[in-house]
Image 1 (cartoon, rainbow, N blue to C red):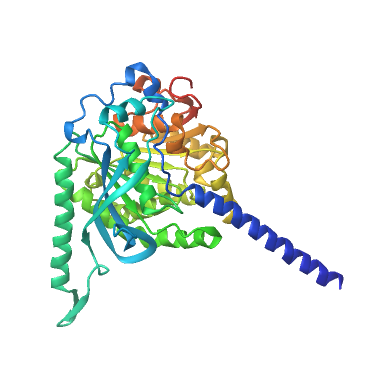
Image 2: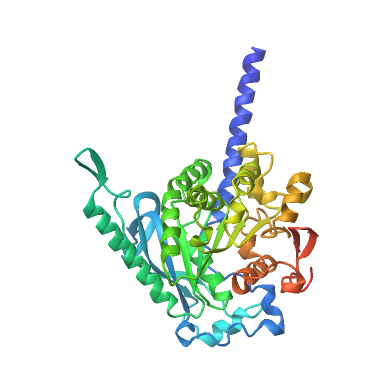
Length: 436
């Protein structure tokens, strides 16, 4: 009887723990859903000498909306008003198009600029997606195959159709590049529990605060199921999405007018991104093809939900650090969502919570010698879970904007006054960049 009671008690405790964990995780997931208000003004723009950011923006970009290019392998659907949107379900093909993010309701450009430079805003700038236009949808993965004599080849008709769709996508990118003096594409890859709309909001906000330069773009993979089981669904959806992201990056890079690509990945999206880039990188490495063909200027991993040992293997052992011109990794030990993931997968440490003290001497030597890798620890307390600090916190997003907007290395001499802890390792404190 005693043993039976012990086992029953253990099952009860495990059930209670599971329910508690699911509840906490559900709160985390809910926190990652579509935000409806414009992100806080970055501390950077509270400085008088930085408030010129919205001066000189071309007139066609002085609007109360932001158009964001997108690639998604979510299943398309229409809402009650008949507007196109995308679900959390996985689509065998991918869609390419433009979505419009509305900033506020009937605000003038002057009002948006004024509120974008204030710590406390006069107007509530609500965000909404008002239009989604899908221009291309591939249905096959990637083509059918037919027998030709003794060989099995890709169906020529499917290949021709795929190439036609690729050219449509490239032409849209060219048209957007023609509207800006900066021939760069800024690609955002979201994490778990994000809707299509929420990822569009983040990219629209960042592009707005970058001074509306270059072309904003998102890759939205099928996440957003919610709950404990939903986390695992999203995780496998990330694996499903790798091929589509790899294809998207390749198409962007092959567009001749694109000069540079900047990729920002968040949470589980960091694993999706690193895996896609790895699959592009390794064949190039083996064949001796120049990595510059991918045009990857900045690769930024924020709150990476990725095992530290896995990341080290890919970045160091497989030499992926050679791929971007600048490789920035943001961590925060107060990121409780990453802490939950660390427990769930029994990781020694997750990349999104790393600290320099845990690096081996060999790893520290590596960061000293490889000047392109920058490890940035953000010493900020972002509330209960603190997972979206890269854009929610005015200090951290200030540094992110300095990377994307100005393309500069860390250090006061470059205009990014991070606190240097060691070669390749930096700290960002509350109040940055004024107080650090």
